[in-house]
Length: 427
Image (tube, rainbow, N blue to C red; front, side, top):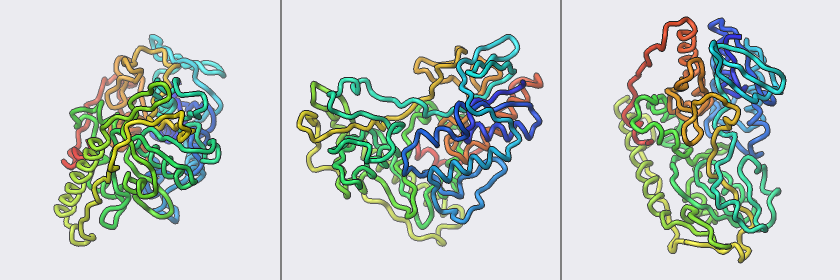
């Protein structure tokens, strides 16, 4: 076998498309079913943050009846299933990889259904297999229910009472909103976050980001790429009626805002006094981004054809910040840890991980391991890499690199494309 792709989500399927186009023999291995994580590791009401017109796969643009809508999980699963069926790639489902080891002439991939030898491996398992949970979670009192978004499905599964959601990126604000609407009192612990409007000047914010070239900003054009890759996902939500889901919207519905969760002393939760600082930073970045988008519209002749510029209100802060809550008072019964995720690479027996257990790579080309590649990670090659529509360009370029490496021509030069300077507003 020449190439083995691990993972049959959108990233692995995109790589399969480009390998098939180049006539490179390959196999895609999937631990469960196609789109396994979307089927089994997402909450019931989740919709994509990107509009349907942006759900593009290699060779397959969106052609459905609702381009401005947002797919829920059943629609997305059906999309990926249909794409996999017409793909010219052999897909082995129900095949869990247990180890990848380097050989003199390639790699040995061990699974629960036998072993494979190949010259190259593409790791397309994504970045959200394992939740990142602070160590203090283990010290919560036994009467507190503690769970992550991977285990959460709907409000009814939680015990009665208040909920503390820790983390205010996309997942945190969506869960806080759903739980508050279910009638539960919700407290949201807010750290660093990225605030975006759902629509701006009559267009979805994703239209602006795509048209202005921000989503095409490359990893080698960013001074602090490691920091950019750790950036929180924006406070957005998809749904039948586009709406903003920022901290103002949540506080208007009764969600209590507190600062970053800083510690636990006995039964008392401690919150940092940094809420105002984090909100001011998010407001500043939002204003700077919208200013740059307005400048782009003016420079490209579409300013007058769009509604007038507007600015969201600054984040409204509580009059008196809450710096602590005693869990013994019974106000909080559940803690939901919306504190991020990381890849599960426990099966990777090749020394390519850094001190934090993340792959060292240069735009998806894994360092120190010729023939080993990554797909589907945040800001892998472009700012859009982690999204469905970002997989096409990444898979095309990495398959080009792979073809050149297989042919013995060494590493091709990385193409640099100029992008709109406003991309800096998202850093």
